[in-house]
Image (tube, rainbow, N blue to C red; front, side):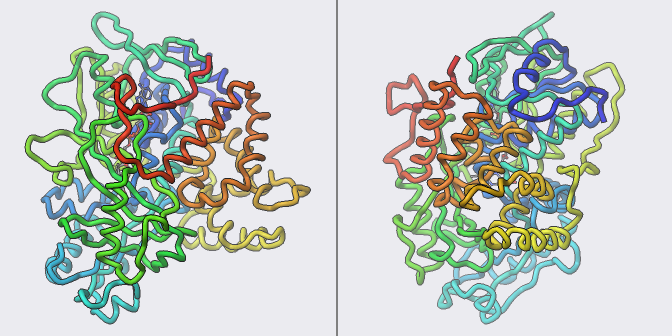
Length: 571
Ligand code: FAD
């Protein structure tokens, strides 16, 4: 571990983190607390570098909480001959699963083969065989080709009249926000100093080289400087905004595309397995059952509106509902069945003449003349290799000799469950404990696949005298989030820490008041801050349940603008 003594990753220590950020000179400063930035922070800290990271919202508040939440090689990229990308992400799947078995869970997929579909029987059989081979999938997990009858047994909701058979193959499912949070917590254990709700607003130059940044703290309104020998921008969709401030935009630019997911109650869309199915326009989308819900996505459309408030439009919802209707006509899902949604932006690299779905998902590193390094593109799945490439580059630029990349051997949670069997056994143990206090097996599954063995801390923190066990559990989670995950706001809690906005939106009303009261006390919120918190959560709830006529435009555009983009500039 790094020699720096870590400060506990508690929101109550934020002022201490800020003091240290102001007073030290870092080897590497990362802008952006998505999976890429947090992955870089962990890699660099584990090699012994002095690391700082700033995130303008919450960790994972950008694209890293809006993905399809799959750790996958990207089967369709093989059709685009992106063999290198598929090999890297395909191989990474198994590694990331081993690093966090409670969070990256094996997920079998059904790829239906239909008349005039994207994949015919032979193409699917050979394509997925190559996919497994390229990614080094274990023998027992390799794809199986199923007859029509076997396919319908696996997934009775598939439409029988069009079905010719299916391919049953292996991927992994995750919670992208939780993965990102665990990455930054782990980086902090290795000595990285990270704060959320701090924007990089400008660069500091010495001898025409970037040697730090100016920051705005959104929770206090204060401005301050951080000095570092190397600054890396992992700003996702915001990378070009930072390159613009650095005057380093050139012919290679970002091309943003929007992806929307819709959430349905599982009883309305009772899938048994995840399905990767055809859409009439030639694209393919996922339907993924998860706990109480099934989610479906994604769209892929060009995007030029607000980066800070990305919403689902009526057209997005219609596109996905029509797609479901086409593949699963018997369930007759309607817009009124949608209970939540999320919309995110892919920071892809522009290529002239290519449609959104044709653009490469490969990552790209930009090096400016003033030595700013920026990284964009890529996949959540490939975060570790992207981080390795960046830290190798930083290592080359610094005069000292650091250790080589260590992250392949660092479990994301210190007290890690070793494998899927251990995860399932632990779920059973937690089930036993929860049943005594009136919480059913859903909560055991939820807790273990969200927090792993850290569930112990939450169960220990549950108050025995609170009358409603669901409220008692949420309060213990809020305590845990504030003290161990730098959960700073109500939105952090309901969206990123617990995923309730997407996976259990119905539970929010019953626990909101008590979680608000506890967080307000733990974090000593002023009256003004309390109002901002309520307003921000209401806005998130509105966006997750509204289908807008059009996009929300950038502030200052003169059109329908993004109100409350961050919402915490309190000062
Ligand atoms: P982000 O997560 O956006 O992080 C960038 C961060 O930088 C943000 O949190 C932002 O707030 C912060 N920031 C920006 N400017 C500043 C500033 N000035 N100061 C401080 N902080 C700043 N990949 C997969 O592997 N599997 C999938 O299933 C998958 N599905 C996807 C589905 C959709 C719809 C989309 C959009 C993407 C999907 N991806 C998937 C891709 C994956 O989500 C992204 O590659 C990944 O999350 C990008 O992470 P990032 O850290 O680069 O960007």
